[in-house]
Image (cartoon, rainbow, N blue to C red; front, side, top):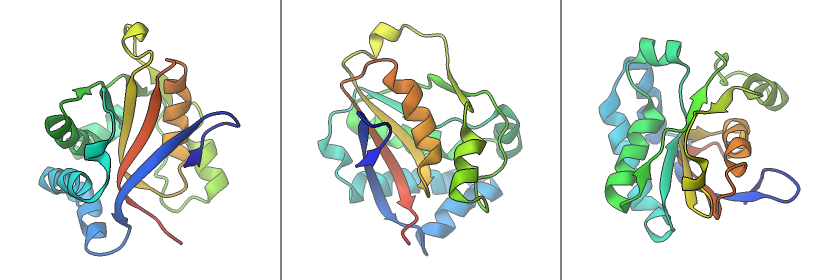
Length: 173
């Protein structure tokens, strides 16, 4: 479990450690290779307990529009699409990255938290849809957890039954 606040926590599922050959699939986003993202989604489905958890809504961690325009796709969204197809859950892109952040890579833990502070906002939506539902946040990589903490903090305002984080891989020291 990864603590989000003193009273709330989320489960985190990672398919693998951040090392080869998975690292190459993660880094494929730099070359606009969306096929690698689909492979990561399948890897998550096949190598975690995700098929056995309750999933109502799948929420990919969004990119800022400038990064999306440069890359042409959102790796987290492509991974989430696989989970939606396999689980029967629904895609809910209800988070927006409102702040253009620097790349997290190369930042220290405290700098990462500051970098993503207030980076997300909830899009206008019917908040009653998410109350008492099982929400799954999807991202490609978890290092310090700063990004998913920032996302989960907003989603807890919707009063869901649970929030689970699913990532393709996780940095393990």
